Image (cartoon, rainbow, N blue to C red):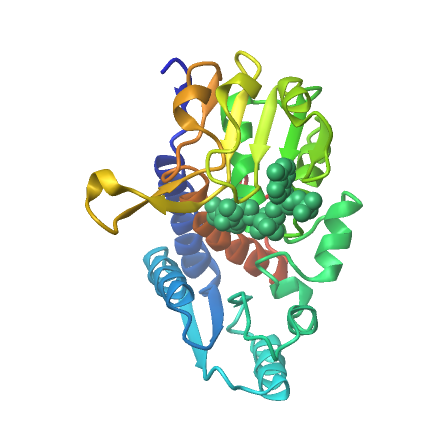
Length: 300
Ligand code: NDP
């Protein structure tokens, strides 16, 4: 491997540390403890794990964590009532509704019921619009984490060619907007893109957010490019024993690491940064709610 490894796990720990220092200062100087409310509807096992680990990390940085676990058959009006209560609660600075929601609940309606100022996932249509027009927004956590790692590695991103593979609302599109905000020349690729390998070869920065295991081989990567692998794919790992699995990204790490200048691993790259950025966003929302200076380096 010739590429520099971008260690998301270590970087995420440093982001959480920065958040913790700032939270302690908010408590000491202003008597404010940021609070994050996480709403989980149903019993999806993966979502339960995410919610538990979010709660644990929220407490570890000194914030209050409020978990609201609702039955899978909760009605839309009950869920909207809870969101209205959380919107009105001054102890709650951030609200996250764990997705996906059960089929009978309208995700757009629910997300857009959250007060945009408390929308720490950055999915509310107002925040999408603010980000798209280059204004101060709450920014989705995964692309924010990618941006932080890119800034840390490159310093300035100005003028670099960036290719984002994937155009989802939660990763691809906000990622492209953030890179544009940092003056990259941005291409968004997707399943209909022609000559994808050639498009990717033009990139100084590649962000892969596709959801297809190891789809991007090293032969698509320009020598020295920076590769951010957002994908989390579970694949069979017979070498570990029968029925065992392992996680891989959307990039074929082994071949890409031979050509790239820098690359994030999976696991241990983008994943840990996502939760760290959720905490950073909760802190940012708290500072904005109280008209206090925002922490440096933790926002877009
Ligand atoms: P979506 O399924 O919403 O979007 C996938 C995108 O990839 C779509 O825009 C799709 O194009 C595009 N795509 C699919 N096949 C191809 C192809 N063959 N060539 C080019 N583009 C293609 O996924 P998400 O954005 O939600 O997630 C992407 C990945 O990131 C997943 O592996 C997910 O698990 C992971 N993820 C990781 C997070 C983390 O914290 N690390 C957080 C969120 C997601 P089209 O629009 O044309 O269909």
